[in-house]
Length: 362
Image (cartoon, rainbow, N blue to C red; front, side, top):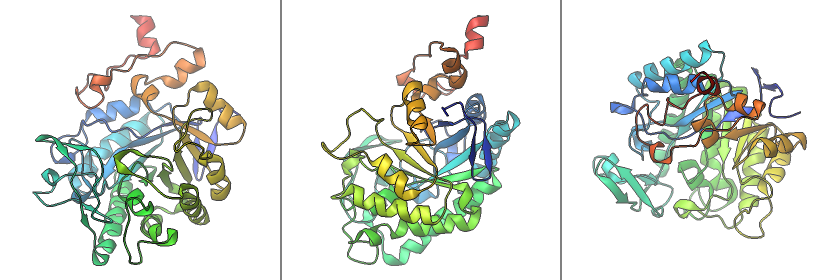
């Protein structure tokens, strides 16, 4: 088995084990409506067995970056329908990543009101708003009475994703955003039923998962985690224990996959001396695992052949190479990514990366 082997993911037959990782591209239009260019962008890369969209806000409350798309208005759903139609027309499969940034936001996005989080603890970093770079402020802690609405935001977004024609959804529980903030004790200092013990801190993530399963069924729902993510002021006193509990609970719900962001085996992990999380969590989850974290073709094939993971997600390589699967199959060189156009440029650095065939023709 290798990354070119086909794979059965729940009810979906995938042509290979390449996954295009979710990547924010900041091309959305007014009202956080997907740009029509996104239909070209995703369809160009649909030779991946599975595409996962950029983070897509479940509500206005979940916004924290300029020009990022949402999944909470009729206009946004219509915009995403153009994307899914384009992907399906060329035989691709695509999941929507549902996202609430929580405290990683700024009052500029909320009419001057504070963003929300599990506790009034500021993330470390800056927000990029229409008014330029802004230092992240301490959020307002969500009340117990507000948490059912957070779950409803995710549930409604899941309904909207189904209406938009997606093949499934991935819950963004990684990289220091809201579900991750509730899970890890460095960001969650609550003393109620959603704080303190690991079971309490995982409660919101699991309730959201259950709500979304109610829309899609478990076989069309994935969940992304990043056990050792340390940016934005994120930390946990016992990451293996924390994420082991979550993995077991998600596995018991029989969701489609667990998407784990962790450096490829052989690279350093943080903190020093901490064991690799992926093999541990795979064993506890007991279901398909997608690996993400600096893999190339060789390391991806090795991880799949050793049965450490089932599929591998690639970010920047897919961003710069719409035909990544074919380039690696032929041993052809890759396009160089244009870093200055990752979050700006409209079609430049977005839909204008040439395929190998175009380069040969030229």
